[in-house]
Amino acid sequence: MSKVQLSANAALRPELGVASEILLGVLLLALVYYVKVKLVRNTKDFVIANRKIGFGFGVAGLISIWTWAMAVMMSAAQTYSFGLSGLFWFTVPNGLAVIAAIPFVRKIRTLMPDGYTIPEFVKVRFGGNAIAGGVVVLGALFGSLIEVIINIKGTSLVVSNVFGVDPRLAAIIGLLVVLTYSILGGLWASITTSALSTLLHTVPSAIIVVAALHYAGGVDAVWHSVAGQGNGLLSVARPDAATGFGITLALGLLTATIAGQEFWQVAWALKKRDVSRSFFWAGAWFYPIPICLGLLGLIGLALHVNVNTQLGGDAAAVGPYLVSHLGLPTWLVILYVIVILSACYSVIDSAFTATSSVFVVDIIKPLVPKINEKRLFLWAKVPMFFTAIIAAAVVLTGVDFVTIVLTSYAIRTAILIPLVLSLFWARTTGWGFVGGTILAIAIGMPIRSVAGDLWGSLSILAISAAVPLVIGLLNNLRFDFERLRQVEDATVSSEPQAVPAE
Amino acid sequence: MPNFFVSSGTVVTIVIGIVIGFFYLRYMWLVLQRVAKTLDDPDDGQSDGFGYSFIGAIIAVIASSLAIAAYGFAPQLLYIGVVLALASPIAVAYTFRRELDE
Image (cartoon, rainbow over all chains, first blue to last red; front, side, top):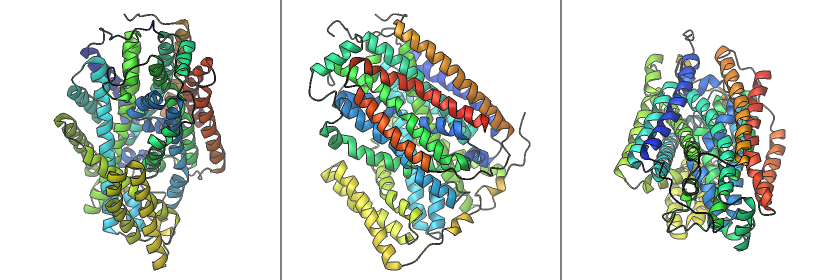
């Protein structure tokens, strides 16, 4: 292994980084233009794809929506930090989180076939309880905003680290690219570009890993170097990986899918017969992405990459660092950056669409029930602008967004069990939902700050479960789930009227 | 100093990847065209079953766990990840194909 020299590639200039971002954007924009002309005629098409997403786009779209930039980089980072145990604890709960959503998305699609958003469900389920609805609207909007911020940060980090582009410029270009095509096509744009991104996450990853293994001295040299270091690096049974991040990550991932508007909107947008199988196939075929890219972490271990002197103290940089320093051809480095950019873009466009549907269904429609289709269609795009502006402000000003992250995390974790109970237990009440959520945040977050992520998360989950259970048992009221079936389509005034453009 | 050229193994992966990419994009495009033509058709389908998905989920979790564990058994098994990464778009292309057939 000593023969392998890690050095920067002088050909990776800033203009190449900017060009990569724009070229990927142009490719996606070309696809979205077709989608806009053929598929997007009104608000219903824009926010829920007219509930016509089939098996193929369902699977391909979900895989990419779930493949965050951090997922691409963290699979290598956790392997680098904990060996194969890190890869195991990162990967297995990730796919499982998508599959675990199946009973919930099936249930909601059956109970409320014409739904759009989680807040809409909560408001109907709890008889218009404004506080319950407000909490969930806040959680959905914060959750989507944080997804945009995290992924645009990912874009700027990778492009700036690999090509030396100003991170602020990289972030703005990325946001403009995604905003442009999201405004054109809404959920159809998100799903179709994500389907293309799924191809970009898989085939290029395989090529890059094969090349990286070769440049690192071959599989024999890499494997024996890691094996020689001992320390259980080639075992999946190291307990410190589970306690260090695995269990907390698993809880967070379950929250992200089961209580994430990005997933519920796809559940409502899929054709009825495709809901379960799309989520299952997506979870199962998501697995190869981290399993393959995690090998970069193993190469980092084999080459004794130093986290402090070579990665700037951040293990997440191990993948980008190796790909840009192993001596790989420049075009392969660009291909790797495109893998990460496409992951960023697909999550951001999905989050934009989530803000759009929440804004249209839970804010605009209740405020202006008689709004005409043309204005509603226009308003559907407004939250995307606002989300992009706030995300840009956070990234440009360098404002510490820990508070937003914590708020989003707290609300999503705290509503997880009340939301599940409201779907499956008729005795769950609005006050149980609100009390469980608010008390879990009020008590659980201080515990989290004192005792750490694991105990904090467990406390939030325990409190958010106990309160609605106790209140539900004491009240002895039963909700008639049939009422959910009677909910009218929120964009009913926006039913297709125009002839599709040719 | 980076080269333009890559190993024979990488070339083979690229060729396989191009073939997979061709079929993936072809089926994706065909489905997209079909969606455009059937956009206003009613969705009278019933909810699909959960039983097969549940069994499949267990298999997927076990298989992915075994794939990661296999990395630790022998150097050549590191290529499992590459094979799976190439299998994933084949599976997705199959879902597009199946949508066309239904």
